Image (cartoon, rainbow, N blue to C red; front, top):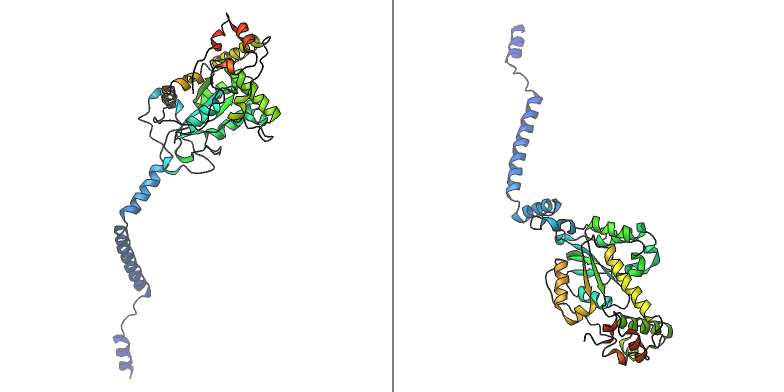
Length: 334
């Protein structure tokens, strides 16, 4: 009996370790996982790869190698907070401001610029006093405009090539010219000065507009309507005429002098009316692709000035022999 028990114990095999089995299963799972991953990677389409590449390209700085060195301070790549420029993120943008005086053709000039598919000129944004109360208030407003975050009916948004607005000299420009000029130099802003050569014509337009504003002859509203204003013939104060013309002339000269250290161009209304190649010069100044610019606005006063003023003979006598005598003549048609 004792011997049989011993043999039975000897023929019993050793137990297999459960740890070894687990290691085998884990190794097999790893091999299968690597194989499946390799198959999946091969199945990724070229379109998906292109998307990854596009994301990497978008995050890279915009390439400006084709822009001349002197021009680089005037070229910008805004990143608006209110929308995404998407595929136009690396389209360069130039900043500009149209400096002018009331009744100098700035509204007409701005509609011409806005007819360009890549230009946004946002009107008289400094008409509100709080925006021009200080240099700080002015620069905050400028930052919004030039970052493409100033939304107006003129905004072209994503694919702008030039963004700006018009700025009347009596809207904080002369009072804060030092701070504004410094901002323009630091941020590469183009200054476009638009004035009238014939200041007598401008004076007639100012008087007609004042009449319309105070009397509201068109259904009780002030609209600067061409037909209504063209019929109005103001009487000019001959006593103060020369001094008023000098004041306006000197104001324009001082404004240009204040911004002489910035990149600027001086354009006269009469030159644009008489020679449309002047618009090409403006587009070249802003480095825009050339387009034919158009406007639906019409001229209010046309024809000889003698038909537009009540006391023409008196005005003629005052201006004859002075530096302003040329204003008496018909100088353009539109």
